[in-house]
Picture 1 (cartoon, rainbow, N blue to C red):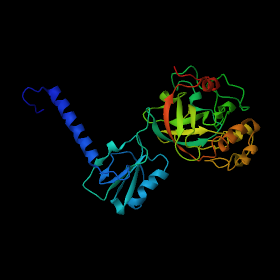
Picture 2: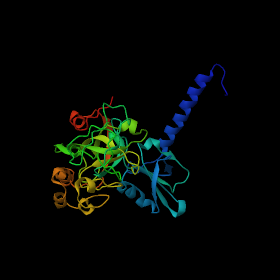
Picture 3: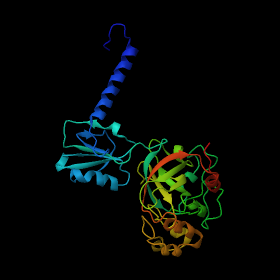
Picture 4: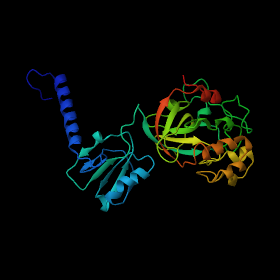
Length: 322
């Protein structure tokens, strides 16, 4: 490594790091932001998760309307492409380019208190939760699963899931439905996929979800993660609500002896509040929650952060992280 007289290698590395940071800051500050959230001749590194062939003036609006999109870049690639991006971001992450036709912008910036941007969906498949199997994480005990009545807790942690083809024994307990704490807060359970972690890190952990879109914008839920899913993307919470779609697997028809049509669309579930009364009476309250407190919101975006689990959630699953 090149060095100046009287400057050792450690000092040189610190000087070099400072110089790189100074260049980056100057570069970001040189970008002329319009309306404080978009600019010409700039770009963001990485974070791409979707793209659309649309004019530059439509790119910001498309990002804002796309679940999980936090920032964007438009280029002349392939006749004009909007690259929608996802992840914690601020305008300081942008860098200038020599191509003034490029446009970049930020939709959601500067999440507070360590929060991250995420997305939600909903489901109720009646299956034994993934975190109900032993050895998934360092917890007091796996999440409790129940017999077909949804009430009788199974002691055997190796009981066969009700979503298996044969030997069906274990199902989601009825008390895994969400419930209202007050007009702006609810508790519940969810399947999740959280970036940088796995089941060992998220099983039975709790997260506060602050909704940032749709009719419940401004409301919050605290959910305990009891499940996972191979169909979930990063920072994705699939909130458990009866009548919200059986998803990839269906344990509900075998558990309750009702036809699949009663449970609504495979993804999304029943279409109206009235349809909730076609479900088993024991879980109708969880379905009504979706249309009442949740205001029929369809997959709202969230800002989320890990929190200490409320005792009320742990009491239902009997699963406490060690």
